Image (tube, rainbow, N blue to C red):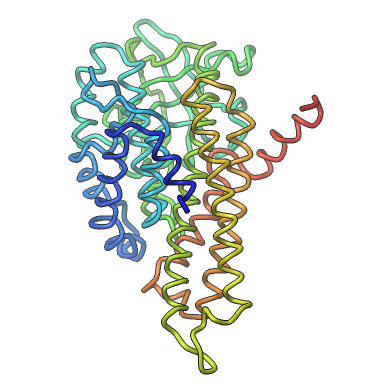
Length: 387
């Protein structure tokens, strides 16, 4: 029987399938063997992120004219899924940098692109997005970072928190409110460079299970952004950000699928070798059926996730599809990775295996790019207005 993933991959182009194979090999060689060390050493895997850049794994959607591959969102989503089999946090760091690189090429001024894009392509400068704030998590419209117009540019003041790659980022696509009276219509997006006066990096969060995520924050104090640093004007920025969030929810769901797939493989291998009460652990029906349930939920999550990816590629309305995928995949991964650990007994918690780290990252995924409660509200709106 052909798997759901194989069916989906068959619809991709040969260059897209080649990218997925390349990413799978890279993750097996450079992410899997080092992921536990990154966690124990509490460090951002900057050198491995740059190695991924050397293989152009961050240029999936970047147009060819800018040195990218010019491939589909679906290809990026599948690349994230394969890398997350080894480490969700690294996959998230890579996709954050990829998105920032593509954002710069799409929205940056010619001078900004000429100065920064080559350095982001090489990985010398790591990028991220700056939406979340200490007092405005999932409520994006409530951000209070301000941008005040002055001669030749803007003065930005405020703080950002829970930003992936913030620990090392040199470029941030940061959102700020230019006119509170306009609400979300007053929000603009600005290119922030960490080396300029007024940028103050906060210490990275000690995030259990996902330190490679590089999550942290920064403060802007009278930071001057010249006019050519405007990436999106007020009126456009909020709409573009919401469109990007649908994609983020879909690839977070894909990364949850990747983690669970790895957990199932690990548990199935372990229980096929270990014996209790005179037979292999996997021959005990109660434990075997837990893995069967996990495998079934994995296929269902992939169907929802790949459907959202296709809608995004075709320019369809992916709001509800992305919410369904993220809600189901995150909740499912949290429960089913725990089941895989249970099938392995206490050994499932040992650092020799990635399952405990995957479990922690599944919980991180429950908050990333919209909480489960937000997904419930988004899906619930479809009930109020009728399907």
